[in-house]
Image (cartoon, rainbow, N blue to C red; front, side, top):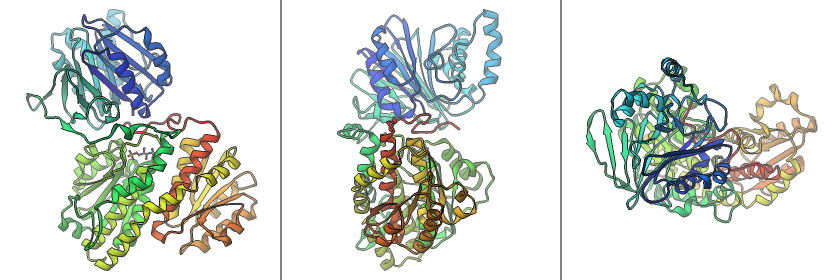
Length: 618
Ligand code: M6R
């Protein structure tokens, strides 16, 4: 949530910062801004409400400078406006800050600083929580502290998780940065006589693949040649950077109109990469190579709880189903933000599995933190970002190998997290002796067909487009599914809401007659997820109940299922899949339907309103 960038070197910082912000715009896009400092300490700040292009149009008027910081915002405190856009300055104008996170005690800090501002006849320039940070630093500087010390003091006063970058007039060749808690990362990139800073790797990749991820509690001093870390608990030191293996092409949109479409098409590859080497048939093994949870822990698990938010929660729902069916042990799922605050009961023999694409979602990290502190239960994270905060909190990680996902809507990471959960269910079942070698072979052989199921689902794009155009004006949808498809109904509804701005509800089909059926009439289309399987007849009963109320039915079922297609108004066929694998055949179609509706409506698919890719605030 919010993207921050920084540059210090011999080039003009402005254009580099702007390009970095373009690559982070998925993190927030309601306003943006840049501050540059020239060699003599003159500071110029430019900020604009709206998408980054409004800032881009204005930036030619900005003086150049070799040091700078920038920000793209997802508003938390104060509505989107020029005034509330970052960077924010101290009332003295000397200290400039960009921030990602929330200063939870900002009211208290504002009240404390207010007296001093009043006495000087100064006032706040924004409604943000951020502005207290430069003010705190500035006051401590005036009291005689060094910048590092003033920044350390200010950070120590903030409650909440925050990542910040700071420039100061008196140090025009330096950026200071700090990270506390899990407010999304800060990565420092090493160039040749220049250094970069960003919330996430995509902003750095055009410049360098040599990076260092700041850790919680790090206070960083960055100049054009080096990074020095200061921490309360040790002497200042220069950390050792790491090389990352990420192809800049992975973050280019290529020939696709939107990142979401590109990422939908990348799903077969993302799945194959995620499964590769982790589903072996001879002898059969699941997750044998790179999964660190000890065998004794796996054998002792009596219950599994899968947690996540949004799309990751829907993956968790499906994971619960597989863990029960494949591993044969009790399993449950929970919304991480609810789980945290209801004092749930866990024991050390419960395995907690956190699903989080970014590894930085604050609700999920908060839940993981609570699990560790209160129960010490073992935790596994399934994430796309190796080195993310969630990987640091968990005992073991399954890293999806999707490459960066740029579209705000989760697509390829949804199917990859499903494959990871399936592998985990196999591994637990095998470790506990509930799956014999032969059983495991059958399960893994099934999983190995998943990339092709997804590929064949994607091939239905044209049919999805026809149906989407027919219903692009509808304001409501009910999406029905049963069993494993209930979670997919929820995911389909989420996709419709987030990118098509269509009100959609995902329901267990059996629940429909207990209330939602009252909504139905000719103008209320129903999407029915109805592949052949044990609950098919129950689904067709629900479809008939819908049709009896004259609501149009769009069924997604097995290719060639004439009984189903005769029953409904519109039919989209997907490759038939064995019952546990239907999520792989159905997912591309539900994604493409939402995508096509949004396209027909002319919406901003990769940057839907009010959203951000990584939610690092509560
Ligand atoms: O990074 P995470 O998987 O933890 O993110 C959780 C949700 O914010 C995320 O799945 C969100 O619902 C999707 N972007 C929706 O497509």
